[in-house]
Length: 234
Image 1: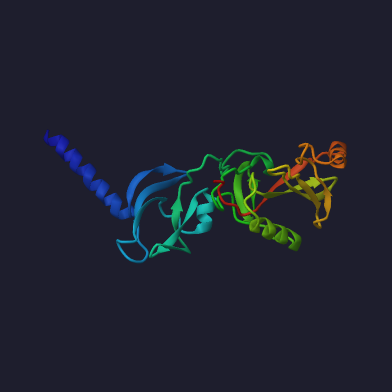
Image 2 (image 1 turned 45 degrees about the horizontal axis):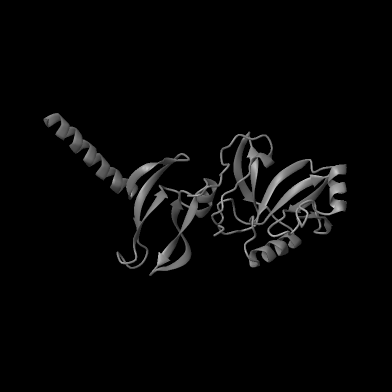
């Protein structure tokens, strides 16, 4: 009995030590990171404090996005401010391809729906050394910036909007997918000029010219997505 009490005491003392060392209760591990249950209080304590599950020692919003987490924003007196306060694991039915095996960039498809979890505007998923990772920001041309701004000011598309950079006939093209309801996709050339509507629309098959265009020489290589900032569908 005495041995059991000693073992229990050691476990309790150890857990208390971990609590103060980590700044919260140890609850698990994910993506190579420790997960803790942590009390956060940025302004008026404890009235406006709250408990939250988050990764331990993820120091920046960009690092959080790189591991597939969801950045937590600081709350002052109940009002959300855009200031980083930690990184929580994503509770999402979608898929984060981080670390997945791949051969080309198009193998790295992120389907998470939480804001910015698939990357910020201008970031792309890359296949690097046979593994998927979220790349750095890609400088985009003015017409793409204008298109992204237009999409962000529209109601959230179903599915959420994205612009995919592709290679067609040895030139760069951009594909904006179809959406609800009966809105066709658009294929742009590198300068933002309309080429055709490959699919979608009332028939689901795009325009006749687009079908001929794609049958003659289909899209042969995907480089990844230029992410349009979206919010979860409700």
